[in-house]
Image (cartoon, rainbow, N blue to C red; front, side, top):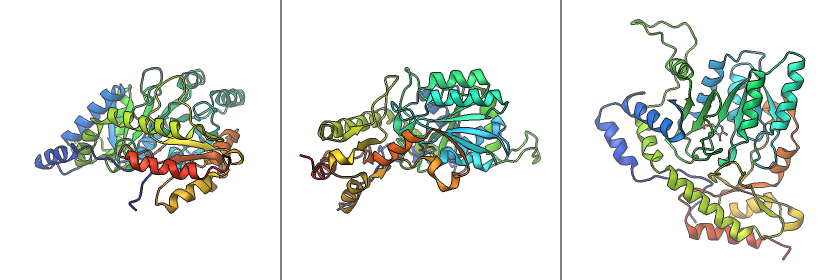
Length: 376
Ligand SMILES: *Cc1c(COP(=O)(O)O)cnc(C)c1O
């Protein structure tokens, strides 16, 4: 039986043409006309003024934090329910993440907890340097109150929209509300360049500085002159061609993933103990991943039992992100709350949601889940 993956790369058919065009132009190099075109087109799609194509979403977060001036000993607030890459760049800079719990509506950062934390820290004169706000599984966080708090306390807001391309918050794309936003084109994301990322901002100097840092921090003089530490973080021209082809199919991808979600709900939501991540009232959820929660006493099987039953049939399902405040690598970091994220980790299962998933494969997945219900 062919393996069904959680979210495999999905080719649109346009890739070969774009790649060939890039190859024939002779630009087999980092940078080049495809990179510039991808940056422009991507900025248009998300509604940002400026964009910088880089080698990964993680690199984009790193560059944003360097630009802000995060230094050893600083603190950076990060959502706890996320992939570790949201917080690793904080450690690259010798700074410390402070993890904030989710609110139950969107599963993203709880603005009330952030407010409490910032108020407490303002009183002792120890405000964090930045907030990294994650938009999880294709759903925007409640950005307005978080942005207002960041403004009030003078803390920079970076949005990790790696999983949220195509979603909206009050009609606009997440990633465009803070000082900078990041996106990922890793193989499992809604569009892919096989590996890559984008940094966006409405402030020209953010992108100009990040662009310089990402190309080994060369100064604009004829000889090689460096006044800052540089990185080799730029996207290659060939991969940008892939990205341009993929970007053209974004709307279809979102529609397809939302239909997949709808079918899971129609077939499974009436089973006792089964629920799904809600769509928050403030915008469109892309359903990059469909996430189901299971109350084992009601349903009759645990998340791990369901996951294993699918694995036996060569179907990949994954628990919800393990909260970062529970990760050994972050054990010395402060956490604010944590019970909501811990409960989502205990009960949540991500189901195969790729835009190339066929109806018959999805029916097979649904039948396996149904067969595990012991209460009816
Ligand atoms: C995928 C992901 C990243 C990292 O992106 P890469 O391109 O793989 O470096 C960061 N944050 C979140 C929430 C992600 O899902």
